[in-house]
Length: 457
Image (tube, rainbow, N blue to C red; front, side):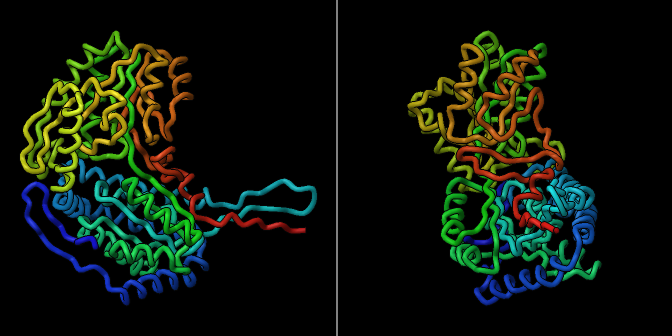
């Protein structure tokens, strides 16, 4: 059973605990969201539903500082990044308010006589199982498009995020009350793992979206499969940062550091494996190691901090064990500092071989792995030699090479000569063990809808 509690990772202070939902209250929440789907979602247009998410976005903007401070308490995100996350979540809701109705418009099909259209309609109640690392952004990209599409939401957040998840429910309910919308359109549930399985099996629930670990995704997908429920999975990643050529190595190094340390290094699509051609490797390794380790973990409430503590004792211990095992198995440590509680200093590893566990693991924190590639083919081989396939980063001055390598990378996303370029209109998702399905952009609106054919004589 998950212990829903806010434990400040910077201080170790247990701020507050929250009881898990009772079975009776959970059933009432499912009934409430199902009733809202039948009474509101089925009788409104996408444009009308869009006004709810528009108001939610506006309320998030009004509460930005308050919500950001909650994220700092819950998972140690630096305050400046927490503010940016809340702002991005508001932008996502605004995007779906503006663009969702057009993307959901009927699609005509040419037929010999009469007419035919494909009409997109919501499926019903959806369950979202969300992670702790982006407590607002992750919810926005799941709930925003699906509410506009006509679904209603049950949201099960990570056990360490009960305060942010409660604040989001309050925001949704405030917006719904202002607009005369049933509050059952969005319900937060502090559920146990066993209760989550029961929710998925419930016939009133039509689908589930999971962002989290491979283990969590596999467990949820297994239950969903037995119950024939649609699933979207956004799981882990060990994204390659491939440097083939550059006319500004310092700029490439800066981007590499930013791509590794964003969100305290705890992003699924962070750059984690740095693959550099032999002619650039030594200079890059020297500059990158210096720049990365110049960033010391510090107080996340300070606006100038870029690297705060890891999210929990468990996260810190897991990363420490991975790093120690890599060293034991023969990896070269270019630099590492001394961990202080959950304040984990950056580390850089080299000489990682396929015989080591680290070669195919995801390091969820400020640990980088360097790989020397002999040429383009070798770089692509290294990039693809991973069980993951979420994002990737490619740096080259040769546009033809960029197009060629993009087509050879096994990943759901490829960023060419830039990092941290996410936007509400850009689809997000992966392949291989990083999951399947897409969030954000217009593609998110297609995941949980009934594409109903309407054929008329």
